[in-house]
Image 1 (tube, rainbow, N blue to C red):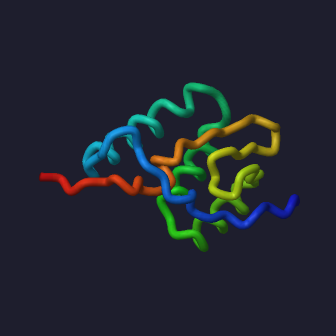
Image 2: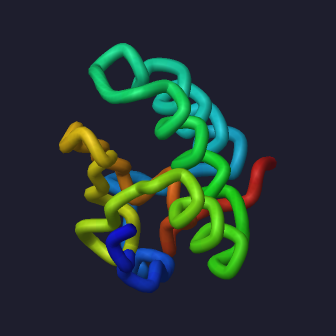
Length: 103
C-alpha cells in the first residue's frame, strides 16, 4: 500500500460572500449529494465525506483504510486506486473566515 500524505485542514480562506452556518451546511449537503454523479466510486465519496467531517486523526485513518491517494494534503485533490480523481471544495473541509452567525 502506498504511504499517503498526512492530511491537514485547508489554510484559512474566505468565501466570496459571508455565509451563515445554515448556508454552509446546505452547500455541503448539495455537494455531497451531487459529487458521486460526476464519477468515481460511491464508497470513496462516502469515505471522503466521513474524513472531511471527522477530526484529522480519524480522517487520516479513514482515507488510509479506504485506499485514498491524497494528492494535496488538505484533501482538495485525491485519487482512488483506479486513478479516478476526486476534487473537494474547501467549504466541505473547513469553515470560511467570514462565517456569520445565523440570525
